[in-house]
Length: 213
Image (cartoon, rainbow, N blue to C red; front, side, top):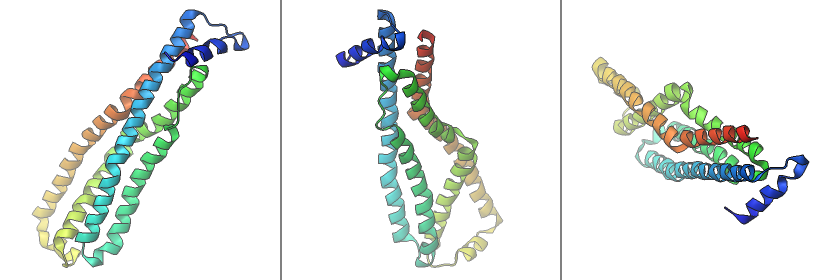
């Protein structure tokens, strides 16, 4: 354990007549250390998403710029920038809330409560029905649309749709449903692996602190 953290916790045990014994001080230090470990892993998960997502975002925009017919670029590229840019900025804003956070033992409970609150909003959104049943299917449909626009070349997109016929349209709809059905559990697993399991640990540490308080 860090000596300065031990000393600070010991000094704070005399504030407001809250005199802690040796076991209570050790418990606070232990909870603080475990909480910071969980928080560090969550910060790494945010950075992983940003490092992975940013070049993918730029790569998609570049491909659309190079491969789309000129008549589609004016509509599709701004839409892609807004949608993908919103996703990246949403992750960045949440990361920015916790990136400088250090859970200190002298303010253990307030720090845990604030950290849990900041991270929980992101985790809950990633597990929400809105993301599962609207954002993911929309993303899959948007990707399919991009592929069809690129494949259509200089042909009018409406003419391409009419030329597909009912069977081809049914196949596209099935691919969309199956693809979304595969992506939803994958996204939920990644959210649990990167964030929720560590958030649950922070909640457990908060409960542990409240028990010894």
